[in-house]
Image 1 (tube, rainbow, N blue to C red):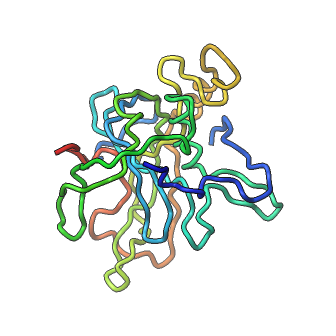
Image 2: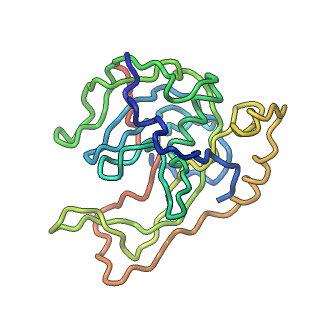
Image 3: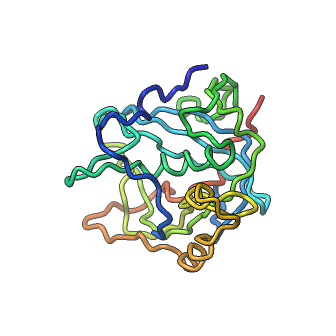
Amino acid sequence: MSNPFGDSLSNDSGKQVAGDKDTLGGFRIHDSGVYDFTISAAYFGTSAGGAKSITFVGKLDNGSDYNWTEWVTAGTAKGGKSFTVNDKGEASYLPGYNRANAIAMLLLEKGIDGLVWETKVIKKYNKDAKAEVPTEVLMATELLGKTISLGIQKQIVNKQAQNQTTKAWEDTNEKAERNEVDKIFQAGTRRTLQEALAKQETGEFVTKWIEANKTPRDRFKAVANAPASGAPGQAGAGDKPATSLFS
């Protein structure tokens, strides 16, 4: 199976693209920390706007089911590439590309563009059926069964509610907690990709990351004329079992 990302991962900007750096920057909410994560599914997706993604599904070392999506490219309107160029002409990869690529590199010693994809059938939520139904997906089968370490942040964010007129989800002035994968580490050594490429034997940045994430990251912002929260929003991420995966 050819790579579903096609040439969207190629650098045709004529610029050096800055890679990832070691910077600090479901429905169970996990405390911030580093968790080992064993992959049971890693499948390709595309948004309505043309952005391409990989969704990872599996279990954390505390026994919890966990899943999240990394957006590897921008949408069609923004060029559909895995990098952006700022006003200074500097190119840098999208955070989702950096994290997904780090997983592939640390587990397989090759990037996303080298992954092997196979058609598989999984049980996946269908919004029309309002239920999980057998669905064909492109699966990065080489990643299945492998374990990576995730730096997961607990964040405080705006709870969202659906605008009954536009049907869009909008921020409210109610706070909610969510989890977000912030950093990827090699299981065992706890090295980042940069540390592994530098041939360090064990990770050092992980200690700084843990220290910097002892308290939840507050991303809440007051919103003028915000709607009432109403229905449960989309703040939580991670543990909704999108799984009993394989039928």
